[in-house]
Image 1 (cartoon, rainbow, N blue to C red):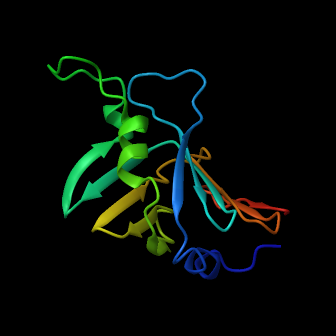
Image 2 (cartoon, rainbow, N blue to C red):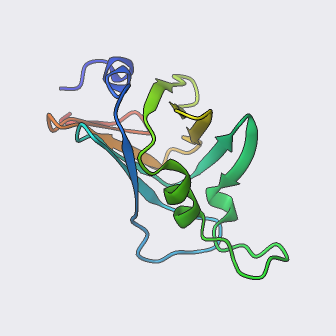
Image 3 (spheres, helix red, strand yellow):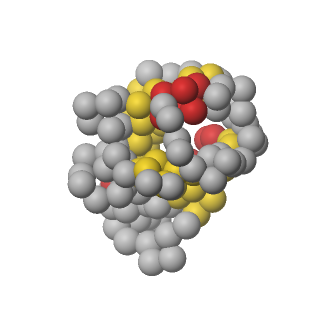
Length: 140
């Protein structure tokens, strides 16, 4: 059974990351993606914000929005380009909100929101344990 999520997140430090698209039915304002870390940990995220250099860059809510641009935003492809191969330097869980805060090299941050009783993020570890944004664990 997963003991302490904070300890497990700390073990991600030094891992590189790949971003995969997982949304079979993309819709405006929802950009589900999966982060795969070099150590085998996988994190599925539904709602998130990406920050570069201390400024908001992109969020899942921007996905498929056009905002007067020549074409709609593909938030997952942009996140893939920004994070591909980056190294994680820190990861924390906000125990009150169940938000995840991931820091990467080059002053990059990914904030994963846990603002619902719905499982809006899920993290699974190589040992077969998992935890969900609503506090659920596997195995129970």
